[in-house]
Length: 496
Image 1 (cartoon, rainbow, N blue to C red):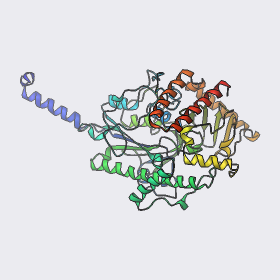
Image 2 (image 1 turned 120 degrees about the vertical axis):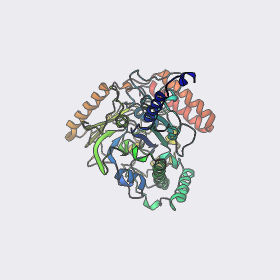
Image 3 (image 1 turned 90 degrees about the vertical axis):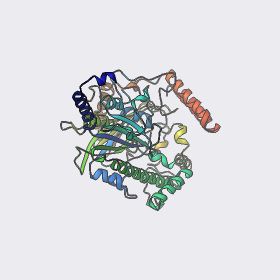
Image 4 (image 1 turned 60 degrees about the vertical axis):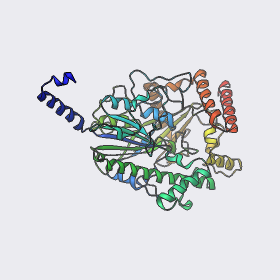
């Protein structure tokens, strides 16, 4: 105080004026990511007719809708590890689901930074929350060591006057429907409260690879209710931004973390697991824009930094897909590796016309033991239907005891990816070209999955997994996971 009093009053007045200007005149846009779990592009603007989604539709109408956005990993933690760094999860060794949680740690390369940290360093307030907002940080689920201090709080409203903010809103999405009738009834009740009625069973149209089993139909209706509840949440977020007077200067990004959790969806590299909605709305976005080019979900890192005027790190693999000089991708890539206890190794490359999938463990069934998926009523229904011989050829594809080493699908004539053309001589040239493109990507991006996960890493993560189940799960579920882990060990010992 003595120092301040010794300064001329005029100087203090100028100093105060400059400080006020600096804190109130930052006109950089706020960035808000809304990312629900386990949800494909089942919104009206993407062609869904069984339900209406007016809030996401409004964002799309007033902004840009990407019709061909794909995740690089069809499961939560690997997908999140990728978009929060703008890097392929396979490059940064974050490709195994829920890995690095035990004694064997995973550390990011020195030249890779997390997006919230880059925003924070640039003067942004950073937050992550669920919805509704509470005092707890929202879902992170990153597969590497990181410092929680990259988030300033759980609420963007905590930002200083005039300070721009970067906010992640992580919601349950498709998980709202639960895994069985109890969860289906719960989300249906919530939908009735919010909209007056739940999604009628008769409106459900299943993909052709799922049988018309009552549990699968009920689950799909509940899933559509979860889409409607997610859309309503988007409306609530927009309304809150408007009430705070910051909506006009806020770039809203809506995307899901991967596709619907179902037999051929989550954890697999078919489009049901990889194709996601991506909608942007806010300053600098031309309303009514529809993009049909291929983009990857990691690109949200680069475009968000660019929108805020923050330099994109040279090492970042994401691209600013809104840049005037952006060169559109001719292909997108994806990888599936271990999910919980279930060891797998699959890679894919997708162009506008074809999808190529390589199964590195062809001697294993598609539906290996997986306690997480096998506990779901829909998987129980699928397995029972298969055992009873009630599935047609398309519906029984997942139940093959072994897999082809390569799969090739003509997406124009076969959008559901049911007819493998890898052995079709008429498509041999395409097979060779896409095989080469995938090989090049794995080499160029230094795919860490080309070598099997070490025994030490697997056992370290399984210990954490089992310790968690001992506190939370039933004895029966714990025994199932223990049995599955031994099954994986045995297959590895057999060289399968």
